[in-house]
Amino acid sequence: MIDLTPDQRTTVFRSMTRERIAVAPPADFRARVGVEVPASVELLPVPETIEVPAIRRYRYTVIENQVVLVDPSTHRVVEIIHE
Image 1 (cartoon, one colour):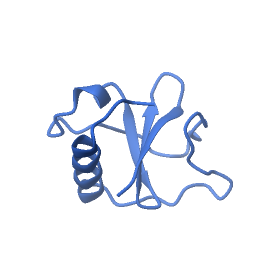
Image 2 (cartoon, helix red, strand yellow):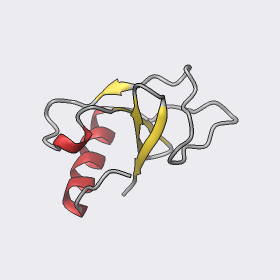
Image 3 (cartoon, helix red, strand yellow):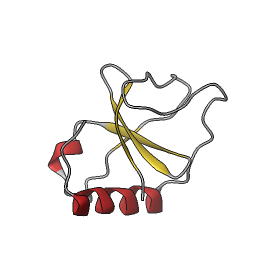
């Protein structure tokens, strides 16, 4: 789990959901911390406009109105941020 303040969580959620349309996940995939994200899910780099250094090394996707942060080396979910 990533140590983010409530303000950082809000900033990340609002910025990433504004920039990215939610994708439909594969039918058998449920985003949970520790779960591997299927290769078919497009993972994007964290936008440089988001000034939260703790998440810079991760990739993300937006699924079901949630920002899903993924470790690019393992493809595993490290954090889920929702409103």
